[in-house]
Amino acid sequence: MSHLCEVDPQVFDFAQRESDRQRDSIRLIASENYVSHAVLEATGSVFTNKYSEGNVGRRHYEGQQLVDPLEKLTIDRATSLFGVKYANVQAYSGSPANMAVCFGLLDPGDSLLGMALSHGGHLTHGFDLNFSAQYYDAHAYHIDTTTGLIDYDDVVRQAEKVKPKLIICGSSAYPRTIDFARFSAIAKDVGAYLLADISHISGLVVGGMHPSPTGLADVIMTTTHKSLRGPRGALILTDDGEIIKTINRAIMPGLQGGPHNHTTAAIAVALLEASAPEFKTYAAQIVANAKALAEALLAHGFEMVSGGTDIHLVLIDTTNKGISGKKAAVALDKAGIETNANAIPDDPRRPMDPSGLRLGTPATTSRGMKKPQMIQIANWINRIVNDPTNESLITDIRTKVADLCVKFPAPGIE
Figure 1 (cartoon, rainbow, N blue to C red):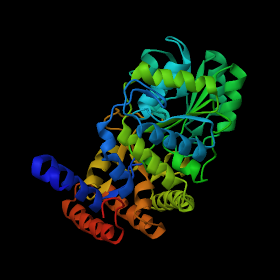
Figure 2 (figure 1 turned 180 degrees about the vertical axis):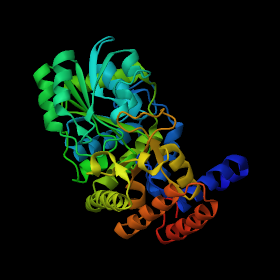
Figure 3 (figure 1 turned 90 degrees about the vertical axis):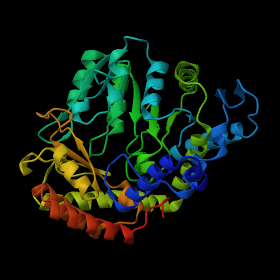
Figure 4 (figure 1 turned 135 degrees about the horizontal axis):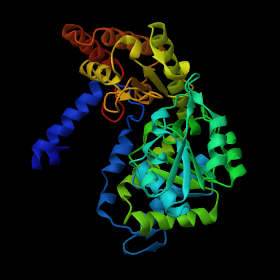
């Protein structure tokens, strides 16, 4: 970044320090990862200079001789990897992609049914303050708070009562396998479209560690970062030729102008990387690490929603430790262990200071960490959560975290 350093030393300094922070921290935020040098290079390529409103072969600007084949390549890699017929690769990220699906399939005021945000769903699945509830008649299904699992009987009851035009399955804080086949049957019974939002688990899906919604959902949406290990973008996937036409129109001119071609290039690289045999090994290790982390934390007396995990994500209830999730997250961050506070089902605490702590293993797995490191990390988490104001303890663990990180280089940084 020599040119950046010369032109804008202040931004260069921010970037350099952020690089150091990512290198020297244990990053356990479930929605974050490390991308490869190749993905970073594609993201910073000259494709950022080009404007390309429209779709392949149908642009409003000239000079698309290389953008068109690039986007076509990205579409082909997406459809091949996920086993679908059609893909839109232009959505800027997951929330705009879900908005495009809604704009494409629904009319204002139509009903939709998604997992309640407070029970692990996403903002775009029907949260009151989000577009998904502002423009549509949004209703929610829940998990069974005694088991921590999706209450499929509740999904059926809500679907039969509401008769939604769209059902959304997927989550941002649900640590168990999602039964796409059951959701598909429920949607068919009430005549609803089914959107599978696999943003968190798409890397596990293509890696064979979670069942795929392909052939079961009318539309699949995924971000391209998180467990898929790409740039901040999104894919909208379907086998229905009419649906892809409505999605394409919803993206442009409905919601966006030109796609970010540099992001498209980086998505293409990430999809190629995800198609390699070693990506399956990576996905399996993500799940193995999450299970090891959960088991070690349970041994330290932590309580967690559903009692464990099937995927990359662990959701802890810190109430029995006498601390809120936010205070725990802040103390851990000081020690170089990056997590996020998160609501638990029926959380009695306010959203900015919830009872839960969400952990994920994609980034640590990208660094090559395995079960022994998960056990060590769980031990550090336990010590800090039990003594969050002990500055000497935090400093000591911060040093140990940095020493561990030296042994496991960060992809794309080192």
